[in-house]
Each structure stands twice: as structure tokens, then as C-alpha cells.
Image 1 (tube, rainbow, N blue to C red):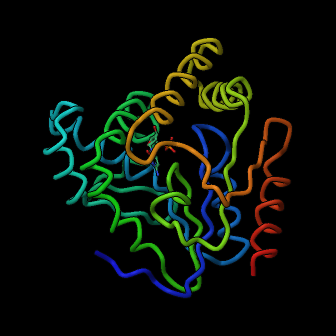
Image 2: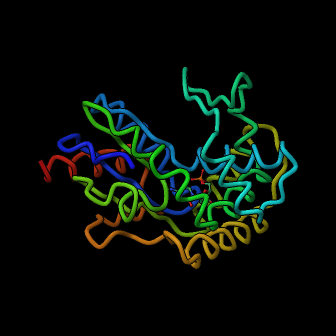
Length: 223
Ligand code: DC
């Protein structure tokens, strides 16, 4: 088990799918010169790896083995699984669905715990996910729970898909968003919920820049 990296500040940004937490977290990390952990990418990589190896998504033992030995690399803004650039492959709806399923398996979460904590390096870390403030970095200096209505989040996802030339149904996306929220919130291990000491930030009517500034001023107020 990794010892807590005492003294290295961590800012956690948790929240549901498409709440904008990834973009906000990345910009906060750039503004502070901190490292950035997209923990959802590790669950997505685990699901992709299971799909590639033909492992069914409820085979907890085999998937935990894959998670523990993931040849994952993040560099140049891309995500790699061994020598394969999987930046786009991990963002498909199929892999997102799979990630939500494997993320409900306790052994998989345990297998990814030390790997996530290893990203806590000087001068600091901004980590985004579902359980960053409640489990993985429970001692974080500043915690934020970013949310937005399911409709607003579905609309953002819809725009992204259309911009990339994909077809999409808004009502289908609202339904998917609700189903994924329900699964992430209802699971017994590390469910999606705000840490008791988290700042709640509802971005339904807020642009990205305002959300970034709100997180930065929350962090400064904790220093
Ligand atoms: O943030 P995302 O959409 O890339 O996450 C993909 C899935 O992984 C999502 O369904 C929830 C799960 N996840 C999790 O359980 N814990 C995290 N810290 C990050 C993601």
C-alpha cells in the first residue's frame, strides 16, 4: 500500500458523467502547474482491456487482474494501452457503459487504488472522478462536487457528438445519463456522492471558466 504523500496538496473534483468535471479539473491543474489524474480513464481502460480480451464484464477476478496490470500511459494529451493509442477508443458509449459496470466491482476498485494514489506528486495533483474526495484522496485539501441537471449534461454530450459528426438522440442521452447516474450512485462500494466537506458546485447555468475560477478560489481559501 502506498504511503500518503504527506504535504503534497490534492484538489478533488467529483461528479456525475458529463458534468464538465474533466475539463474543469484539467484547466485548474494547468492554472496551478499541478499534475492531473482522470480516474475515469483508468476504469475505461480496464473495460476496454476486458472487451479486447473477451472477458465478460462481471468476471470480477479476471477484470481485477487486468486492472492491476494495465499497461496504461498518459502522454501528449493522449491515452495509451501498451503501444496502442486508445484516446478515442475509450470515449465510445460502449466503453463508457462497460466502465460503469466494471467500476461496480469491489476487487477492481481495490486494484486501481494504489495506482491512483501514485499520481500524487509534487507540486500537487488535481484528481477527477467519483470517489476522489470520499475514498482515494480523503485527506485532500480542497474538495469539489460538480454537478448539473441530467438535461443540461445530456445537451452538452449531444453537442459534442454532433460536432464530431456522430448522430445522437437527445432523449436517449437523457435516459442513458439517468441510468448511469443511478448505477454509479447505487453501487455498494465507493458510490457517487459528495464528501461531507466538499463544495457543491451546480454548473447547470455556469460556463467552464466560471467553474474553474470557483474551484481555484475554493482552493485558495483552504491554503
Ligand atoms: O468519468 P468517466 O465518465 O470517464 O467515468 C467512466 C466510468 O467510471 C463511470 O461510469 C464511473 C466510473 N468511475 C468510478 O466509478 N470512479 C471514478 N473515480 C471514476 C470513474
